[in-house]
Image (cartoon, rainbow, N blue to C red; front, side, top):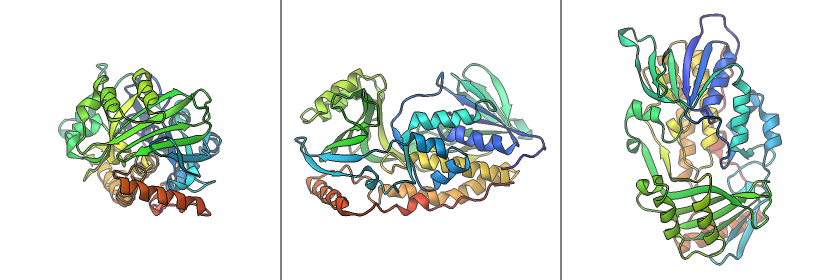
Amino acid sequence: MTTHTSAKRSVLISGASVSGPALAYWLHRSGRFEVTVVEKAPALRAGGYPIDIRGTAVEVVRRAGLLPRLREAHLDARRATFLDAGGEVIVSVKASALAGGVEGQDLEVRREDLSALLYESVRDDVEFLFGDSLVAFEDSGQSGQGVDVTFRSGLRRTFDLVVGADGMHSATRAALFGPEERYHRYLGYCFALFTMDNTLGLDRELLMWNTPGRAAALYATGNPDEVHAFLTFHRPEPPHDALRDPEAGPDLVASVFADAGWEVPAMVGALREAADPFLDTAGQIRLPHWSRGRVALVGDAAYAPSFLTGQGTSLALVGAYMLAHSLLAHPDHTAAFAAYGRDLREFVALNQGLVDDGGARLFPLTTEALEKRNTMLRGLVALPAPTPRPAHTALVLPRPAR
């Protein structure tokens, strides 16, 4: 993406997790945009569960020059061990075999490592407004030459374009298209994520306990002192109110796992004391359009696929590249946003469809389905190598726009 000398367009990006800084990088690199990123957190967010970068997304980070450092940060989990209700080992398999990842090519890194690298790549060239957020925006009167933005701090500014990269529960999307429930596809599961002490001495490995409709996992990523803990359970209807309540949420989790064995009681107790608890439902965002006027959405705000696909970060990275490419290839924002939707839609659909093609197979709801899953896992041990999923590489990136 080469530098042009014409007047630069101003872009405000809301959100500084993955898709926001990635989009900022590509737009700044072109030399054709002045970029501002606003983030409601007071600083770059630390922590977060390990995330995967697969297929087409690996090519995105290669083109951004980040691949060598991400390879250094690769977690290289050794194995995943599955346990029965009593905590006895059912089977232990290569971690890469579970998601259709390709050993030596795809990546798993800490979210904070990816975010930090993206931020470092643009922090000296892009304006960041931490501890602030959008509260209102509208087209600039009859001329329609920009978007008037009001920030929570009281700051008012006008930008040529605004992009919402503010996650699954995007406020930008709500302002554009209305309440989340209109576009949220609930997938039947709730979850709690948090860190706790590594009392079992785990090292770069996953332990997962299952009973029908419930799962508990401990994932060690190299820190000898702590592990990532994960509790998930089935609910026919999403208990949004309980999960958003800091007391009711842990109470709900405790009631669901009240009779559980293995390390689950300790995990439930650790959830109540955790410094970083995150409780939510597994769901997808399915929108007919990803833009309106001069405002567009990218990443989870536009097309969250859910953790059940393992493709949230990859879609965010690919989506940021494709949006930047469209804005550079089409000077008119209407044409650019249309091209963005047209060129990315099939890739998004294929990756969201992974949940319907067995993406939730690790969390069976019945005894019969659990035994079928265990049989499948035992079969993985005999396979010479995992088979990559076609959805991961279904999009060939266009050449950088000039």
